[in-house]
Image 1 (spheres, rainbow, N blue to C red):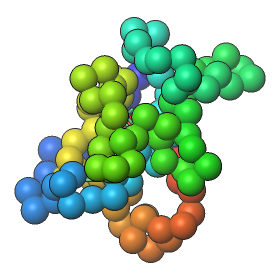
Image 2 (image 1 turned 135 degrees about the vertical axis):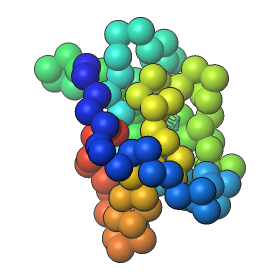
Image 3 (image 1 turned 90 degrees about the vertical axis):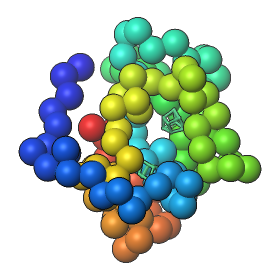
Image 4 (image 1 turned 30 degrees about the vertical axis):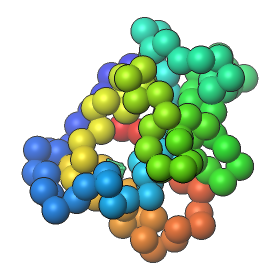
Length: 111
Ligand code: SF4
Ligand code: SF4
């Protein structure tokens, strides 16, 4: 899957930290690539065969460590999660979306 990064991705806000965030990027739809090795219980396969990270009923990824609100499979997280820049444009967008509508389950694709 090709990933298109926005022009302003390089502009990272250094004041943003995952340590002070509700892991809002982990509410995005995560499409898995062929080389991602994810435990099957954490994977959802769509009718068209596309493999996604499964999500819990509250909208957060099934792999999220709820006690600490951080990735529970960090060392093995999908490649697309690795590309998501803390404080970058997508991060800022998702944080703002969450701030405005925290109870809306996000259906945006993880870029
Ligand atoms: S990358 Fe951004 S949205 Fe994701 S947990 Fe870190 S600060 Fe929050
Ligand atoms: S795999 Fe980890 S980093 Fe990726 S969305 Fe799920 S909890 Fe977040």
